[in-house]
Length: 111
Image 1 (tube, rainbow, N blue to C red):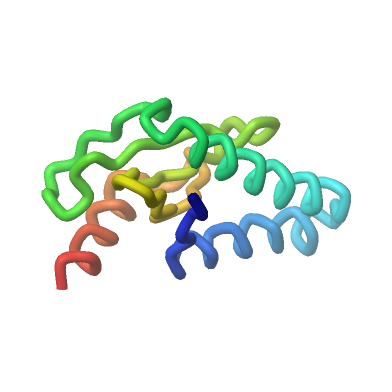
Image 2 (image 1 turned 180 degrees about the vertical axis):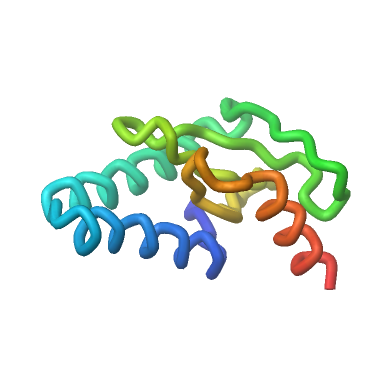
């Protein structure tokens, strides 16, 4: 089974990568982050029901789960697991307003 990385999640990954690469001037950390995200998504694909459930008030993302990116534990992968498919919805740092971002994502998903 291959994961589907939604555009917003891809943007999140690139945003965090650029933060380490440009803002922090730490190219090794940026590369390590990308590898850690890949390994986390691979782990999710193997054990999709293993992530922590994330309760939202919106039905569009019912069943959403999250898993921390190893080595970057403040960053979590938010995903939906369907039979035969894992959809990575967002990859967000814990200092962001997670509930607002995910509720906005639910609004975009339901349109």
